[in-house]
Length: 588
Image (cartoon, rainbow, N blue to C red; front, side, top):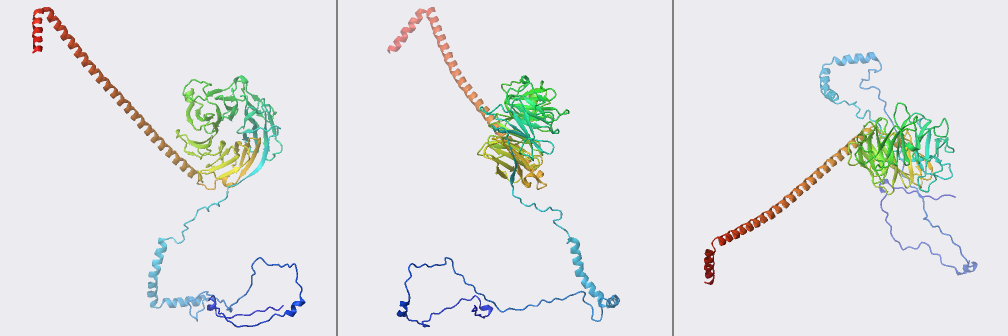
C-alpha cells in the first residue's frame, strides 16, 4: 500500500508559533439520502460492537533542512621559523639563533620579557603548584547496609525440648560449640542431664554427648585445651569433662562441700597449672576449685551486702553471673539476682578487703556482665528492661544506657572484633546490635531470630558468627555483615575513647553537684535543728524565769507574814492600838 505523505517546509524561526484558525460557512459536498436503497438491507438483532478503551495515538514526522559539517584540524609541530629555515636541520637552526643573538634589539627584548617571567617564577617559588593537597587520604568507605543471615540450626536431640542455658566456643578457632540445656521451671524435666558438643559445619548430629548426674546450667571450654570442659549443675555440684576419655565427667565435686543451690555460672581462672576455676550459685557463694582436688574447695566468698568481715550465707545475695578478665587475674565481678554488682579482689586478706565495690545496677537480676575487650575499665550490664555501660571511676550511675524496651532483656555481650558494638537479646526473640559510634537512641540492626524468648547468646572470636539459644532448645548460628564484624574506620578506637571520657567526665560533674546539694541540704537541716533547739531553750528560760519570780514573791510574802506575827506576839497592846486606828481610818 502506498503511503500518502506531505512535506511542510518552513523556516526554523517559525516553529512553535501558535496556529490561527478561521471558520468558513462553505459547503464542500452534499449527498442526499436514497430511500430505495433501504429495501436492500435487513435489520440485525442483536448487534455487537467493539470499542477501543484507550486513546488512539497518531504518529507524524517532521524534518528540517540538514546542514553538512566538515571537521578539519591543523598539526603544529614547531613554529616561529622563517620559511627559508628548515627546523629539522640542526645546523640551520643554530646558525639562525646566532644571527638573532647578534642583533642589537635582542638584549632589550629579552630584558623586557624577563620582567614578566621573573614575576611568574616568584609566584611558582611561593606556591607549590605541584602540591597534592589530598595525598595520603583513604577513600571513604562504602555505606554497606547492615544485614544478617542464619547459617545453621542446632536442635536438642532429646524428645522433651529443654531451653538453651549456656554456650561456649572451642579455643581451636571455634570449630566446635558446646551447648547446655536445662529446664529450671518447677515442672521441668530434671531427669535428662545431657549436654552436647556440636561441630559448626555439621548441625545434623552432635559430636559428643556429655552426661552428668544433674542437668547442667552452664558449660565452659578451657582457654587453651580443646578437650577440657567444666560445668555447673542444677543440684549445686560442679563437674569437669575430658572428651577424649569418656562421656562421663572425670571430676565431680562432693555434695557436702558443693553449693546449696543451682550453679548459674562457671569460669576458668588464669593459673600456672591451668586446672583452677571458680563458680557462682544462687546460694550467694563464690567457690574456687581445682580439678585435681574435687573434694576440697580452695576458697569461698559470700556476696554479703553489708561491709563486714562476718561471712553470713543467709544474708548473701544469689549470684546470677560472673565476669573474669585474664589480664587482671586477681580481680573479678559478680552480678546478683537482686540487681547489685560486687567488685572483688581475691588477694584481699579479709572479706572487707576482698569485696571492694558494691553498686545497685538494676531493679531485677543481672543476666549479663561483660568488660569491653578494648577498654577494660568499662563494662556492660544487662538486666530488667535496660542495658547499661559503667565505668569504674563513676560508682553512682552509669555513663551510657539504652532506652527502656517493651520486653525484658535476657543477655548481652560485646563484639570481640569491634570495640563500639554490643549485642542484646530480648524476650520477644529479637537480637539487637548497638553501635555507639553510629547512633545511641536506636539499635543499628534488629534481627527477628525466633518466636520464642532468647535465653543466651555468644559471639565467635572472629566477630562474624553469633550463637543464639532459644527457650525451645534450638540454637541458631547467625552470620552478620562485614560492617558489623570489622572496624571500617581506623579511628574508631580513638573516637570511642573520646566518647567514654566525655561521658565519664559528665557523670563525675553530676556526682559532684549531687554531693554539693546533699551537703547543702544537710547544712540546712542542721541549721533548722539548731534554731529549733535555741527556740526551745528560750521558751524554757522564759518559763523558768517567770516561775522563779513567782517563787521569790511568795517567799517575800511569807517572810512578811512571819515578821508580822512575831511583832504581834511581842507587843500585843501596840498592835491593838494600831488595829483600832486602822479601823477608824476605814470608817472615815
